[in-house]
Length: 395
Length: 149
Image 1 (cartoon, rainbow over the protein chains, first blue to last red):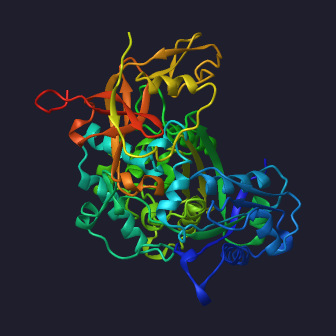
Image 2 (cartoon, chains in turn green, yellow; image 1 turned 180 degrees about the horizontal axis):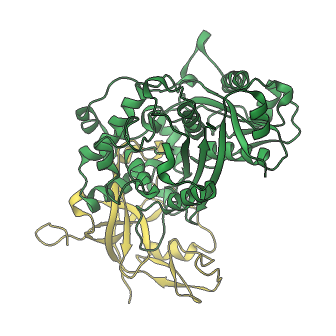
Image 3 (cartoon, each protein chain N blue to C red; image 1 turned 90 degrees about the vertical axis):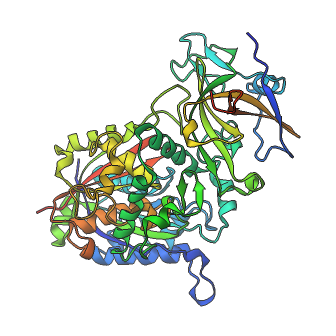
């Protein structure tokens, strides 16, 4: 198998683009094409070098259907490998990256674009939620009770606080850490300072989580240029190598109907072990961890599932500074879904871009100390599945 | 043993009514009559919720209808303040995960006040009687002094 590398990347700041009107109005393919051009410029490659295009499904709130072929045509790309659109809940961006890698690793392509644009902010939240209750849970036996997607994480939070005796303030500290990272990230949606009191006294959204412990509405666009390792080396430009991937689906949709521990996020444990084993690396080799975590509790549970911290201690560790960009286990150095912002279908692409930015030493004020490896993870459902990639900056 | 569930009358139609198939019809008819049913695999014995035509544990298609217990324990819950359009008039409303006595686990609407201190408390299952049909729900099983069992 050929090894794949990331030779170019770009993203726009996470923002409410869909709400812009008049002269400022911009459409999803206009934004997506702008990040493709920027990523291609970084790679030094041209349109004729692109063999394949993998597009993250743009969600249900964009007017243009078959967005993948429309965008490929807008860019004037003649593709020889494949042009596809992928969908996988919160893992959509992760699948987009993964499928682009597979095109290159299988030899079908020397250069594939992984690109996505997610627009939703012009759609009222309550209308958006009418749609999203159909995505998580069984529509005939669970969605009937109005379980919005983050309600499932909120139930994890309630159990986490109870079972491990964690305080609200300790859990809330994850939101503060992410905001501090976002304040140093020009791509972040929320860059103003935030206090513990503001987090704890924010209006409730899904108890026990308030406004700052769940993701805001967001639009965004991101692109990655995936090439063979040979092409990356020949370019003479900096690149990031993809060392391995791991995947696990637990065969559940949201929750088990059998008594079990719902907080162990075992799929992430399995997928990360698989990826690290294949890369012949350990957790300690990783310089950053970019984890799909739409709520504070998800970041705590994911950090525990990875094995960074003992069960029930992920939030403690964050409160103690262990997951800050200057701590021993930097997590979500971009600000994560909570403060970088969360355009769901492309958030994992932003996470890969952050890992690359860190690996190449370009993260400026939030730069983690020099490191060679990074881990990214995306999920679907309630970590019913996890997709992990291990990245490397060749020294 | 037959458990007839207590009923709570709800205002208006169900906000997001379930579809009923030929297979799930016995569940909804029984609920309308105050009983909570589901399926059990006749090969491996695993109970399911919701009712399934196929056992996810062993892929057997030999399943039987059984009556579930009317009480359980509250595994977790949340109260939803920012609601879908269809549920806005109900907000804030609570949902919870319930481990029924002798299984299985299910998720449903919670009626009445629920506090974080009442995690793992005993609950009893309910029929929520809407204008257009029933849903199932649960409420805390309170002692005479009002505390949770």
